[in-house]
Length: 320
Image 1 (cartoon, rainbow, N blue to C red):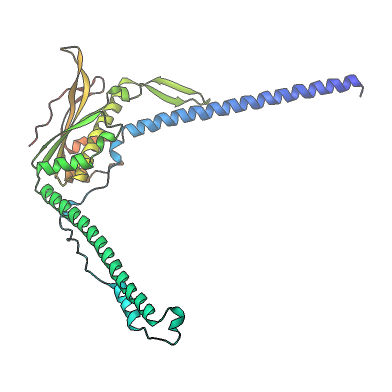
Image 2: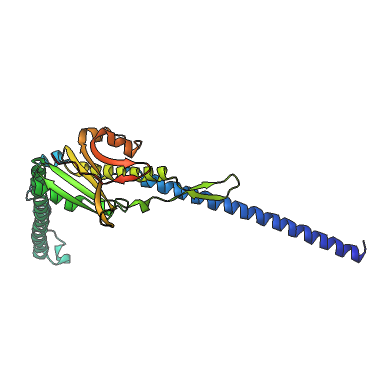
């Protein structure tokens, strides 16, 4: 092959390499597009799932009956293991012919006697530490036992104390901005201010057969149904947490949303869902599987909702 043939062969090989590189680049871009669109769809679906399953994660419960019957801490008994050990060593001491090599018999006996005193001092420090630990445990036991007793009697002050110390619902970002409480003898009425409709995405994400990400407006009925499930899930979450940390047989939950008051043209906090939850019915729910809105059928509740208009203000259930 002449030099021109060599050049033609090199040019052809270069063009083939460029075509192969371009083909691989397109494959990589397509794979990246597939991955990015799949990730976007998965992220959207995960958010929707999280939105309507707020109620599925609850705190550990508190057994106030068990706390009320917990035995009183046993005070420590003074003992002298270190002193006794050193005394035994002293009692077993016998003068020897070679004691002079270690300072003499009197010096050795004095060291053993000092060890007895040090052992007694060590025993006293350990006993004082045990006493301090016992006193702390006793104070905690007395406080817990008194609180448990008050709670089991339905004392409003005790209920409020537990709510203030143990309830962290407002830290859950999907619950809303804050929760107010009305507390009476043996009942509690929680009023969470839930997020508005803006918490629900207005678009639906799907991946086309070609791998592209498609975003289409979410149908109004589906949008409103998702928001209804979210609000219902918040009510279930609030009730579940309260039933976990309080020895009550029933709780009331009224969800409020920032709705437009057509008479003034301003948005105001308005009740949109009010539920009377009972422990027996609540504990029979399979929270991981229930549809939040459908689960409300198990309880007395007030709600005005349509898939075309969404929520309308209601009157909260009157606490019995």
